[in-house]
Length: 141
Image 1 (tube, rainbow, N blue to C red):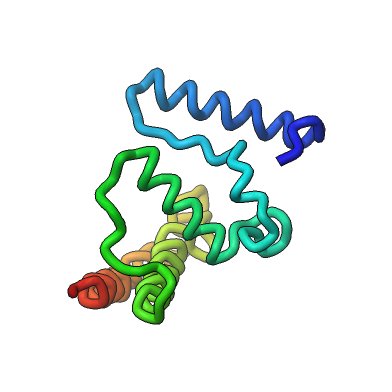
Image 2 (image 1 turned 90 degrees about the vertical axis):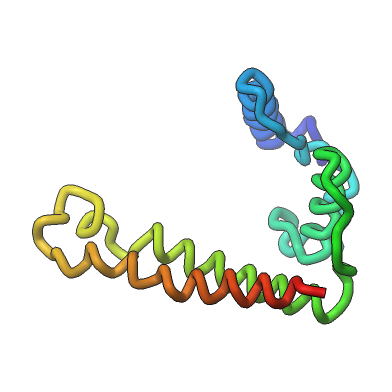
């Protein structure tokens, strides 16, 4: 990443503060901001967001830096792709569970107006659990 770009200098400062905060609270943290390997065009979809290859590279870095056990499946095969797609689906459901279409009616100042909207987020729970079970099943040897 070009660190002389003013925007990247600001982002770099944010990354430093996040790392300092994590360390001061004795949390594990991995700095991906300055990792040159993630700047490879194959690792980026649009110059900013990580592609599937970028996420694989980031995962390798996390595993190494956090001293995690090695990955149990080959990340470059169809089985890993099925796991990845199931995780993306579960994460989407989880997002919608915690970020309803109009959270003012669920959690905010208008929650007394539409009581039915407060029940909607909980209706995602069985689908999220279903996806969790599917992911576990896909991960079994």
